[in-house]
Image 1 (cartoon, rainbow, N blue to C red):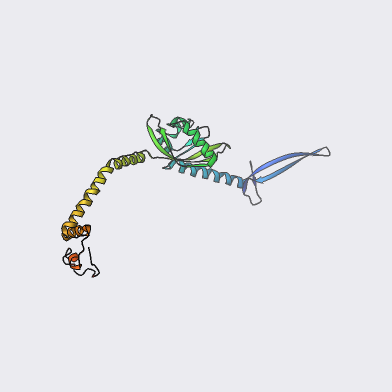
Image 2: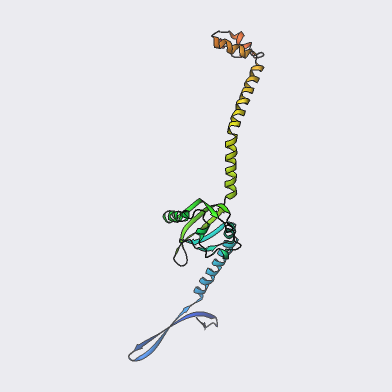
Length: 238
């Protein structure tokens, strides 16, 4: 690139392209001059965009990553490194991610699915951390093409170990309490029934009369409910 001065005195960057052409035994030079400012602005915008992306990527709470189809980690943010038990992304980048699968065969299955469907949503994966401890993550990923034209898996992961343990504990608790809850409901139902019969002592007699086929008039029926003689006059039998 070169710099030229315009008629107004402004200095602008330009890109020069010089070509030699021979005509009738004479050599001529043809120079093409192109304003380099649009190209420089585009480069500056790209650098700014990359800087903002890196800032978001690095500071994200979500554990974000990018791996090649062969499993090698190309990029990772601090949250993803922490998720797998590393002090920084530099310790993780370049390593094969398959070493962190509790079931290594699951990696090939997930890659095949994402190559077919284009993405994964909420896939739960048992993992091995750097210190050998186990965990459970929820994976979201898409198949994309990186800057080198190579297919790559890019996405984020969430640690759901604590949630899974909590759900398992609730399931075990509810399973263990099932018979006890049924017994409690039965006892409460019996107690309420007895309380109702004690409150209306005539009901027991009416039920006995109804069971034996005996009939009773309005007076006999209402006698079981003192203070409620204004019940429907259509009541003729128990």
